[in-house]
Each structure stands twice: as C-alpha cells, then as structure tokens.
Image 1 (cartoon, rainbow, N blue to C red):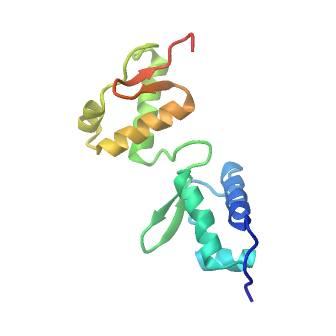
Image 2 (image 1 turned 90 degrees about the vertical axis):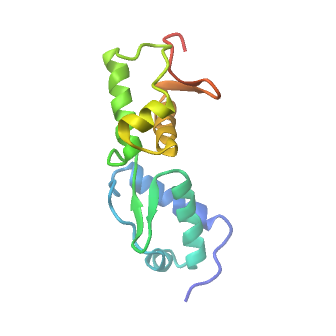
Length: 151
C-alpha cells in the first residue's frame, strides 16, 4: 500500500536516477521502468515519480517517447544519436581542428538549419550543448562564438 510521500521524495528519486545515468548504469537509449514500476519500487504515488521524471526531462537526461515511456538520452552529455548531438559533435570537431578559430563566430542558426535540414530549435539545442561544454559562448542577438583562448 502506497502512502503519501514526504516532501522532497521526488527530488531523492530524481537524484538516484540521475546518478544511475551518470554512472553508466542507465545508458543512452535505455528505457526507464514505468511510472507504476518506479512508484512500487520506491513505495510512493505515481505523481511523485512523475515529478522526479519531469526534472530529468528538464535536465535533458531523459525524453518522453509517446505511448512507450521514458528513454535515457544523455549522461555526461547529449545522446549523439540526436540531431542536435550530431551537430554539436560536428562543430566541436571543427573547433578542435582549427577550422573555427577562437573568437570566430559559429555558422548562423539559418546555416545550420540548411546544412542539416533541422529546425531552429534543434540548432539552438546544439549551441546550448556546446555552450554547456565551455567550447563556445552565446551572445544573445549576436550569435555563438568559439570561446576565446583568454576566457
């Protein structure tokens, strides 16, 4: 029988799942147990589990697959099977190769959209991955730039 979960339980469940992803126990592409399964495992209501999973979706560690469940999309970084992950990898390779020099602007969102046949949101997510990795800086209204050496 499930009881009302104490405050903060969803955070503890999210922390546990996040650690399992980070430690490689849940690999990109792996499906998470169902809400009902996680609720039974933690002896909490499904709403508590749903709140924990929503945090991981917001952190882009898992994604919702409609009609199927939730799938791990990243651990230490984005799942490189996603379009934005591949774009981020390609741009990072250009930065490492020196094709894109420090301080130089990255291709515009429109250029990335055309080159990869993706939406503006996908291009922006790729830039977000690069910014979170420290490889680029995003200047709102100006674009994304390779991080200067002195930064």
